[in-house]
Picture 1 (cartoon, rainbow, N blue to C red):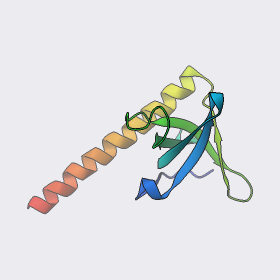
Picture 2 (picture 1 turned 90 degrees about the horizontal axis):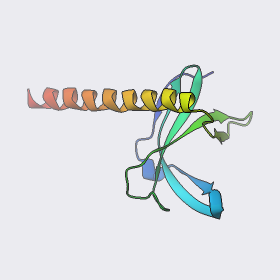
Picture 3 (picture 1 turned 135 degrees about the vertical axis):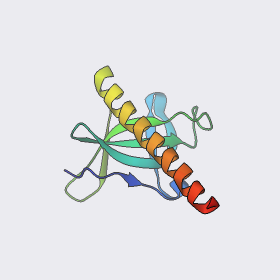
Length: 108
């Protein structure tokens, strides 16, 4: 299993379309694919639909089929959602910390 984190440099260039309950199609920018507790997850930012522009991030299980095509799966339990959310939040905090370090290097 791949356990590396994949970032998308320009999220608007890579997106998926989800079909939500009620048949609503929502385009989502791919923010990152990341590991947590021996499973891969994907973070998506809706760019259309009811949550567009709200900052709400969708988290799903992530895998690839034998042809390398992405497969998304719902997170089924509160415990799994907590694991994925904490991993994503840690990822964001790590990125923000590195941005601060990069900015301080520029100021020296």
